[in-house]
Image (cartoon, rainbow, N blue to C red; front, side, top):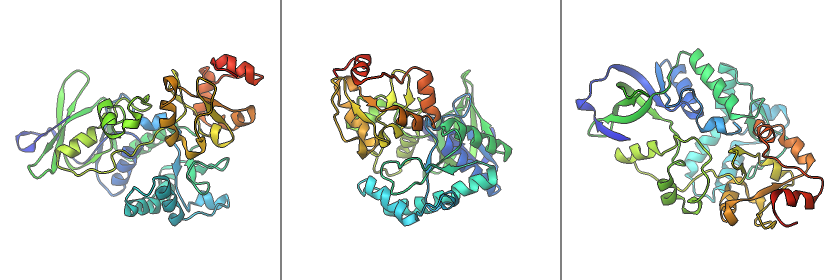
Length: 350
């Protein structure tokens, strides 16, 4: 990752808009730019668009949507913004939070109307920190479906997606204006693409252990559950260009990732009445604070391991999520007829 002078670079091709990263953020940005008439090139390092989006449940919170109205759910932009600020201990910029709360609902409805994404609202249970039902998802409740539908919509709209194209260099003027990018292909060949505008949608720094240790020391020993490409490229480039930073300790943790399977276990297993215990069979925290906060509590347990305990009623709800169904197929979900039998299966005292 580097920034080099644009004056010494000859670009093979010029594009009005270049987007780095074909996850949900990058593809939605590309669709938006394309809707305004711009030619757009999306650069993706992987063979197919996936990113961290594909590893998630693909759920998006939004207030005052038509899906909520149809379900009889009363919600407002103001309530959503207040929930975000309360959950994040009032650290975020209120103006940015309000902007997010105002625009996410119309964005989902635009994706549904213009590009056919069949969202609905989840009403089976409340997510931590939300005052009402506002999580929206696709039928499979999977990020894989979300990314596949967005990629198909982008291609149908005329967005060019170039895969196996790792951006290694930004070419910029002395004042920091980016004029193009340098791409490295799997065989080592390079290309230079000029751009009128650049969107950095290459996710965060969760896969960069040094940056995690610097900015989130409480999770320095945590298992990273995200795309391996999340190395902090955008952060490193931004700082090199002179951009200011703040709130770099902000993160999304998760207190229930099946190990060694690497599959997210839906937090519905907790919100519907489950608990977590450590290797000693002891409950160690109030799980109701939320799955992100619970991540640090799990890391602090012996060997950084916890077990989520729930019954068949809760499992039936969890099976509405593709991730949980995958976990069952992979053998990550253990069952027993009695508590002593279950304790024996997980190697903990009853």
